[in-house]
Length: 549
Image 1 (cartoon, rainbow, N blue to C red):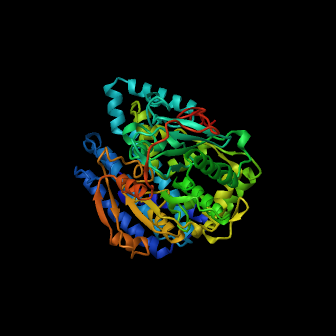
Image 2 (spheres, rainbow, N blue to C red):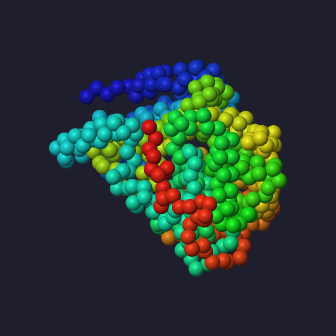
Image 3 (tube, rainbow, N blue to C red):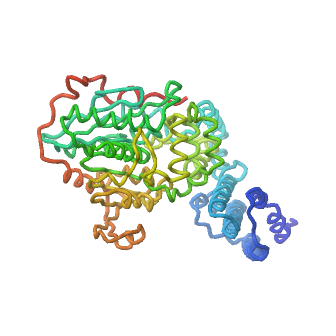
């Protein structure tokens, strides 16, 4: 057999790699001497890999995509995987030598990683030995099932991450007992049924993100943060945001603050008979809650008895990889499209977040569902992840420009609902949580909220990512968290250097915080609502069941 010249093959690939054109378009440049060093290193490594291949030696591969017997036991497949990983290493190294602004470099790094992940040999039937093996074993049935799965997903408009027939909101998700006691076009307010003989006098008002549906906080009983808060002796109220349609196409950030959170505060105060509330916000819900509390503070009201913020930005100085989607040009385009009214489709938001972890949320399911013909497993968190929501255009555009692009929320100069927003006026005990592997709200940015707020603040760091780190029930006894209560750390790095790792869930730490700020123990109210706010329907209510178009 005539074998190709490995040096010629490697040189040809180097000259035709996809990064050169991309860098040219972005106005970036690599110094010739740096490129020469990369070229020499690549040719050396490729030559060594080739020698291993022709001598019959299996390359050492640790990447989990290629560790099965089907990959390792087939010399050509193992070589393809090793060559792919070498090419990926070279492209990533090239990005790091690019002469560009930090934002340009981050965009190039992100785009190159998208290309690298998409070009994996695991993503194609012709180069995936696992899929080929299953095709043979099933006598073609796996391919037939894969095509059926793909066509079904095309009709649904998204890749199936979970067995969607296994779950239903109100049947086996979002089933913590409660009652909808108020609604307006923007949200429903749920009051949950007490489960203890006595409760904390100060109610807890929970504000989830409006970018996703609230039931991430109330999945199944064993991993429901809502149920946990109720079982720990709290009277819990929660906002269930509507899934906006054209009737809400002109809704603004001010509306989410005034007609959303502030209205929910008023109703909770009225029903509970308490002026002070323990406030809770998750992700953008935390940003909206903090804005609302600052607006009320400007009006001379301090309604919060405490504030809990989970994976929340208040200081948007470092937004991590999301920065690649936010610059003046991109925000201006969105403003032209949506500022005067319209909807930001939930499917677009879902695609954006999936692109942050394409191997986990895209290609893994392309390989399993389509190439191998597998049906996705039942997984509540991934079912929720696919249940997307729209956002009103004006609200979305305001949020992009004033927070992600210009970081104006912490300046004290923004006007929301007719008031100057000064977050330092929020002078209450705070429990601030970040997730160590969070790719949406980098944990040092969550930590930076401590410098924005007044009052006695405590930071807790959990393991895992934006969602899995938060939804970590003590019943699972998984993962770990870090605490550092010395009060001396002024930076995230210093805080972590002095932190202590604890096994298990951070939820009991939060429960202690709520108890410390819950007032005296009182007998729970016998019925939901009151004479002014009467029960409307059982939880989870209608709003959470509305699907995005």
